[in-house]
Length: 215
Ligand code: E4P
Image 1 (cartoon, rainbow, N blue to C red):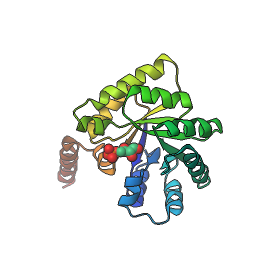
Image 2: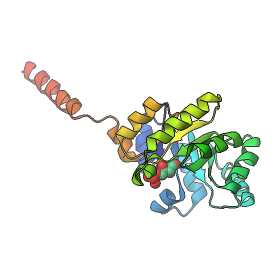
Image 3: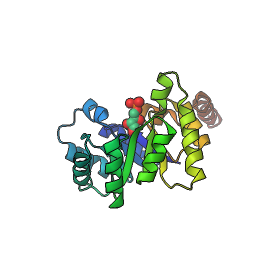
Image 4: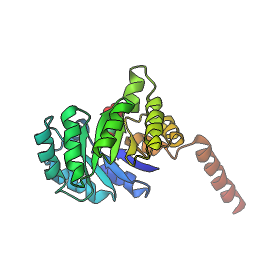
């Protein structure tokens, strides 16, 4: 299972990468706006230099020609750039066109399994089902991951399930059990992955006992 970080914040990306278990990055226009990026190209370049893995950069256009044009520009930044395209009709056409040229695509804003199936058929490398946003409206986000896994396995589809909109550790655990290929997490979830109060109290006791025994 791959771990991606879901942020455009370079400090967070570098700190997560320093742990040595980070496989990639996802961004979106909201995350880019949050860190106030003025030079988008330069910012993506810095992200790509910080992490050895795919970096999703989202298009802003909503028409097929615009998305293709943006995608072709984005991939010039770095070989790890993956073009992030929304699940809309023109998006599917753009996925087909770009994927046919061997360009890596992450199809975003997936909220039902059929959307994932369409994106996979169009040639996306990743589909991004948004778990948390489904939970937010009273649906079961994890059911979507299970359904997509079943469908992709039924047909031997190689498109990777990139679980997104992850809010907490429990989502990560459920995704691992459900067979998601990738989970993209905000920095606070990355940090919480290694936390357990019994680990901290256990370590404190070990160190105290060691100090005692040394006199
Ligand atoms: C996916 O790539 C998106 O950037 C992200 O996971 C959206 O999550 P949110 O619902 O926390 O905004």
